[in-house]
Length: 297
Image (cartoon, rainbow, N blue to C red; front, top):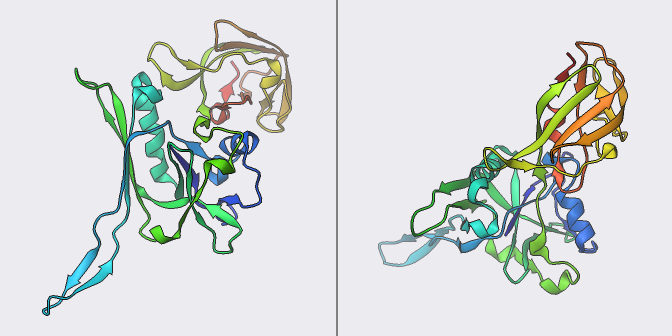
């Protein structure tokens, strides 16, 4: 599998793994759920099959004496298949959309993880950290391949390493360096938006859904309770933020019915006020919710 990582954080510091870091489930969970997605969050892909990781022959110059000289090394190219066994199928178009979005990043790098649980890295200039390998972001591409009588629907994922990267600088973190965690079990957060089912001055009924799943039955965020709904301003639990009044409103109750659909009840708000629904729960990213406020009506 691959783990896409912003090359640098907001302070311009390269994202990497400190050599003193204890590598366990808690650490990897922390990195895949980092609060600032564009700053330092890790984005693991599903597992791959049919991996091709090759570097084309270098450019060489041949003199009139028939001697040959090295000119330049060409960028390494990576290609792999994401099949239904890794969770594609009906979800493949949404997965393509997410992968292709990485092309718009300011800088993206990658940790590659082998079937033997080795992590391909490089060493930082100061020798204190192990860094992901820089990718040519513009080369990232996910091709949706529809099923045929002989092959299931799948995605072909490809990118080029940055031309600045040199194979001589690559190193590996061995499976034995992560003794208590299966690194291939790492999963990305599921992005959740909402569908406004209905509303009043005292209630919002929201269906929390992702782009994954079928068109009629999308994957939903199930099992949330009142404390999972938080203020998008202060992060206080059991609250919804009123952007018009710049205040948190207490949610008195949350009822889930059917699964993934929630009725939020609170004290009456003024018509025209803007409410910002938001939630926090392990395994999900609800950023899309707070980017889509609701006008009270």
